[in-house]
Length: 321
Image 1 (cartoon, rainbow, N blue to C red):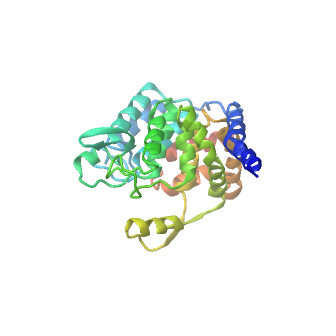
Image 2: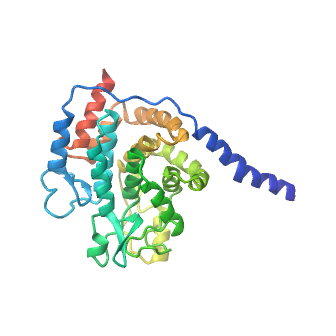
Image 3: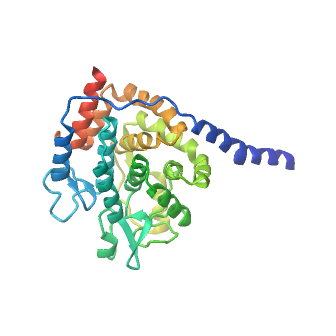
């Protein structure tokens, strides 16, 4: 019996991650930058003048970006989505990297008056100014990691290190604290954050949550409706004492858009992710139609002139040619 358990342990902790590692090294075919007649220089000028808020990222409406406040909860996520769309056309420049780095540094949370790497606020300096800043979301943490992948920076490793040290509790109200206040439960996020790190031990750990990452990628394109709070949020509230809103169901776009961010940023590092990206992209097209991407962007970004809608439309036009 001991031998059986020994073989099982060997398979789980050595053979399985070794197979994942080998597949991960394969550089699968990836699409090259698209060429199009479009004035990207003017487009980017307008975005940084009217839409980009240095406090937290992209706004949902123009001309409110210089009022000294943020007007949505996921500005850095919207910004990274735009950067990924730009990258499809080969239009990322040094200035975009500099803007992203400055934004991430401003979003770093404070602890005893000092910034802490790997944990972030929703808006710049919020944990320094406010006694109880708004809790950050896994969406924004994912955006920081995705942008780090895009520009080959170290923020993804910092997120992984902070997450492991604090058992995945990203509580920007109480930094460097192990607890449940902002515990990130989903192994899908664990895989993305850990695999994005350049640390080989983080990569090894990521493979154990890869099956959930795979199943989540399978579920997102097949499920239009999402309901909140989900079962684990209700269980967590019982432990933390945080009162939740009544159950509500809605047409989900954040899941598919986060899928877009994860897969299109991590494809540079992971052969596993790049291999699955085309397959799941086909599922989105089957379920939502050929125009699935712009449909999702339009649901989330109501303004037709929003930068993400403009570039998603441009991408669709090229796909139709």
